[in-house]
Length: 299
Image 1: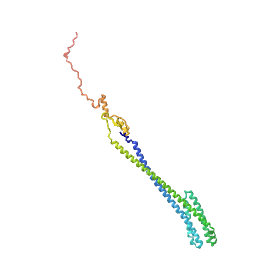
Image 2: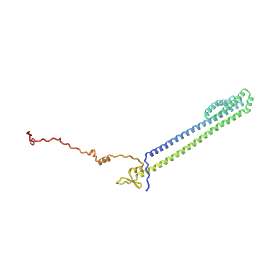
Image 3: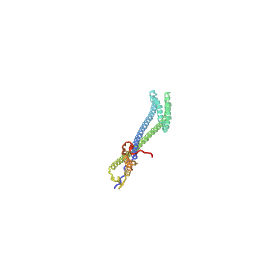
Image 4: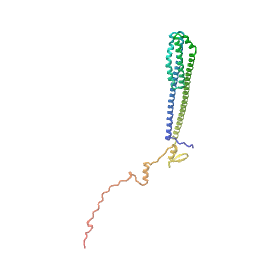
């Protein structure tokens, strides 16, 4: 005969199941919140990087426009050719200030930007000097500065520094994107693991419930004389059966019916069975007949 296992109905198991369910639900919500924040933070970083790259490109475009304005004025001597130069010089200062704010928390990029600031100052000085010489009717001196190659070398150094800024920003963007992708994959795996665990727990709970119902539906054999229960090939008390079968604990008391029966067996009448005494008339002593006792005479 197969030995039945105790049916698990204890409160600790129920509490444990509820705690596990709550932990799974809370963990799933926490993972969702963290994942959402990671995506939002990555989006903000990507947007900041794009703005930085755009600002770097605007700075280089302004330098190119300033140099183009200088070349046109030196060739023609007409002031309208200086319009690109004038606009670009005004933009360059504000563009450098914005880049300085964007790189405030990145020391490596800020160091490169400081080098760019020095090169920009040298380039502006070279452009301004050649324009002033051309304006004062000294084109030969202006061309001599251009032919020296100082402006060309400064512009090449600016191109290299600006390219380094762009590459660093792109590398940081790629790193952050890869980090977010890895974390998203980790959260996905953990979430999938939690889902599998929840399914396993749900399946185990369903199997346990079906088994519990099946065991509760099984009939038991009770001795008609001793009131003992047939269990595991022997006869046990009802308390032992419930303890072994359902993992229940007991305490004992006595019912009113049993207490009344015990009192009856001990010879103590029940309060409801005490007979009522009938009332009797008051006792009156009998009167004696004087004739029955003759008077006493003295001798």
